[in-house]
Length: 222
Image (cartoon, rainbow, N blue to C red):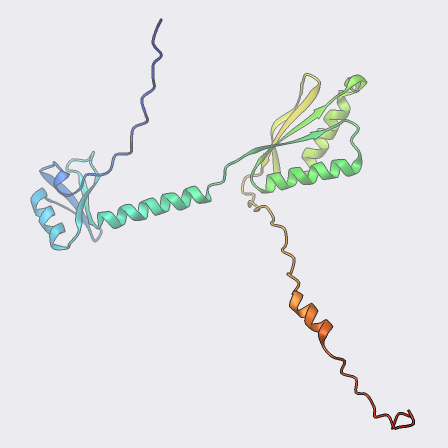
């Protein structure tokens, strides 16, 4: 019985050599937009005098290109940029809407609105139209419905896969139009919190109407 081969883990990104880890006898130093070739020891002394690090940025050149920078700060900024990029990256999902050859008008409009919302969020849409029983005798109706949907969404969508028969259904794939500005999913509006104290306070306030004095005979005075 042959042993199953285990794939090796992906190689880690190699960090640039810094300071005394640099092995080249001479290096190219980039300072103020100028390139100067100098001995490695001289470059190390120059970096040390500035309280910075000598970092090898292009090791494949001869001599290798180095920069005098704060390596710790530079590494932190690179990690921060990478984190921000991954946070803003949108994962494209494939959403699906299902149609019927004799779908009612209001149901069709609802399906179209859903497809539009998916596309505006930057996702792709798989449209399936399934036939039942004798409906298979009229596949042209399904094709017309697919064509109608693609035309009505043409301003925000492109047809990535033309409508095609797949067994007892027609399948079509839509994708967001290039340059379409992605729309974030709408959050439900928050209802204003009613203040119970204000309601209770209003109910307990005394009436502001002044009572006119009443004489002994029970007549109200003017």
